[in-house]
Length: 221
Figure 1 (cartoon, helix red, strand yellow):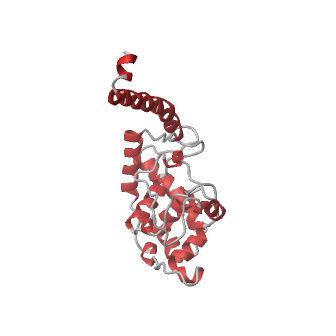
Figure 2 (tube, rainbow, N blue to C red):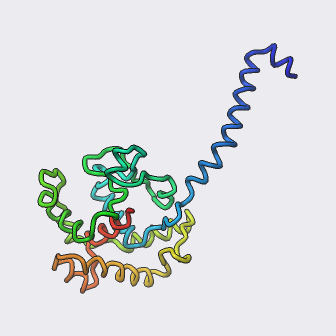
Figure 3 (cartoon, rainbow, N blue to C red):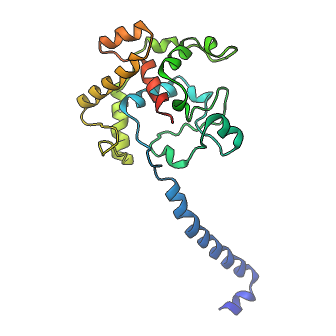
């Protein structure tokens, strides 16, 4: 057989290619699958964080901000540890982005606070002089869509096996249990905010979009 292959260069080349391809798959695929597993400490988003993520997408924040820190010193010096594939295990859809009109937000939860986000979203040029980011004052008036966020969490749990309700993971439970958890999580953010409009709305049981967005941004670490 081997003598026959040696006398037929084309089939010999095909054979070599198949052997190398098989070896590559056997060597690379297991490592790739392992690196795609959730990084230790990575958790699925809470319902409030998902509501904020929906606001982030709806208002096209991902058009100007990436969430992908590349393994270059210039990036890690500015934004922190480079991104790992397993950190996106529960992201649907991915918000990596490729354009940075504004800074990368992959680790923004490590160095910005709730009150900073509040002031920045309302008056961006007061916080960053010369910024071209528009003010998002409508977020202080619009009510976050918690029901749709809960439905999304259920989908991620059932379709993608997100480990909700497991030890050290966000609790999902029933719709009523989720709403209670959302109010408790939102209360901590509202307590750090200055907006009386947001505070009064929360007393009425309303969670404004800005609260949900801050919850999402705070989760990016």
